[in-house]
Image (cartoon, rainbow, N blue to C red):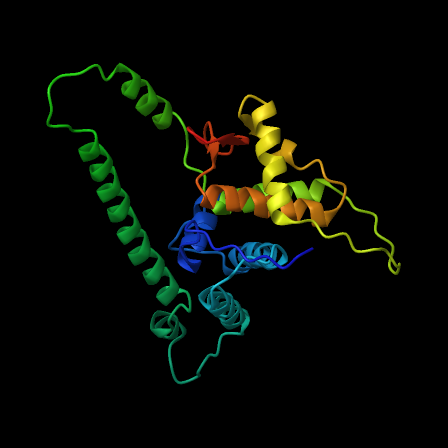
Length: 250
């Protein structure tokens, strides 16, 4: 497979990924199970690396931070004979405290940014002009409000499930002719497939490939089409199936 790096705005940083995992796993942000969250975080990082996505170093720094916190929490408690045990427990700092503070602060700014974005969207609907028929626009706005925003992390999660369901029986050692799959060719194939399906298709149904390499190229093709704003990935409600559809005017 040709080397192909993808950068996309949906990557907002490691704190954004941690918040996504906390929400998906319904975890109390003030009492994070570090072992579980670290395992899930590393799964996502491994998936990004396998897809050859351009991962910023801050993701790897956060992975090291989580592993360090996990190690600290596994260490036995040191007890001094000269101090009362209850006092020691009060004085001992939780190694998760700094991470929790960063997450809470990040969440606060993210929520503020979303509020500002909503205000911007509301303001964009105001026009200073003579009255005109806006019934078609009202229908479009209503349809957008019934859909749930899909993040790149949701897509990675769907891909993880797909890879677990597909089992490739590959020999331990073999010689085969390497077959290159051009990314632009797969992009054209995805667009043609969507148009044959009235412009909309289930995310999983796009992956009819028989090899892991073809699955990876298809996923990268969808990401590139999203980046070009040629397709949209939608979800009717939380935890529902993902759908890929051709963007209006494309």
